[in-house]
Length: 183
Image (cartoon, rainbow, N blue to C red; front, top):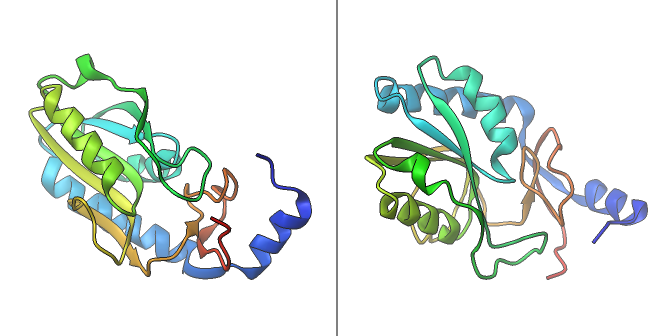
């Protein structure tokens, strides 16, 4: 569903900035340091969780000064909606994972259901180890925990730096909370 220009402008004008671009970049630096300490000697296979983690992955990879390889995994509960549903698998690189130290990069730890399914899938597919990193963690209960977290924010509907609102705003230069979410 496309947003009309008036709705787009209304959402943007009423959103609250929770983290600036500078805040996010500092969080990415901290994440890179933590990941280097954990994985710097492991030659990990980095899995970008599509589509939300594309920005996180693109901003984080140049900060990781160690040998690594990149692939992607695509599992989603939202698929353009504002509430999560069943996990939909679009791409699961099972053969590529076997025997590898896997780093899963995602945009947000919301309920943790998607990340829990991805970690389970990596283990089922024979990963030697699985490390998880998320740019944003909401302050709430989660089905699983991330190993590395960039920034923690209140439990609100967010967009920016890869996170979307109805498939829009992934390119916003900060992290924003939507004023009203029509669920």
